[in-house]
Length: 303
Image 1 (cartoon, rainbow, N blue to C red):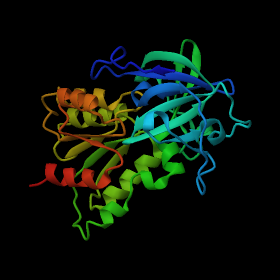
Image 2: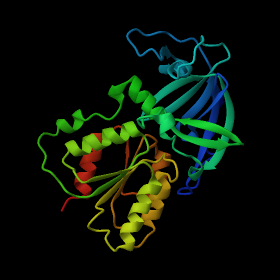
Image 3: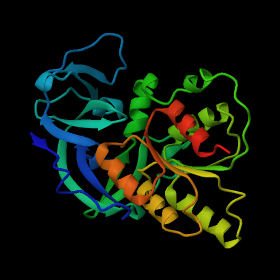
Image 4: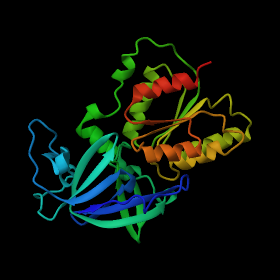
């Protein structure tokens, strides 16, 4: 139906903006980061697969590529059969290509990450909401879905695996203070568990880049950076302040630019690598490569 021409909506690095593709399910408005979207096509015949999660419709094969289809309305609890006029949003993140069934696609809006709020606990309960944020686009509220969490729930084996760390064998405990910015409650827990398993016990977790930045600024004002920040790990997609903006703020500050910073994101592509390098990131890794992340941390913190 339509390719998403990212050359027309390419954002300047570090501006703290996001392009949101708005779509509907049962008349309700949802959003996905355009950086995750390859194209939108009319829904097609799907071959069912046995022994899969109920939300996995099956597979289809456009242009000789087999793609798994997730029935997003079913996953979100909506009733009803798939319709002939439904659309597939073909996504690519975490090095996977997945199609999500939706009802309609509305368009694309560019907004600041500061305009995206985390759902409060009346919505998210334990903090593991399927919504990563609530945004206002064209005077309407849009629920930004946590697609990484959706896939991690449907196929846990595709997410961060603590077993990768266990395969490294016994490791010594390390007290280097590491700051981690990750907005997904589920992925934050997985990252924390993996780093603790790897011996990094002095972890400070933040749900967005702004919270981490404010913590660093407070340390900077107290002239207490070096004893409290050895390394920073940041996601890219986060409400309030994204990882690229955070990287730009850290690496453009004379008192902070020496701190090693690793971007750990589902959105790492060659295009994103160029952005990250321009902003000064020391390393950029794709989720869910947690073993690789630990190896990089080991190297960056090597005495």
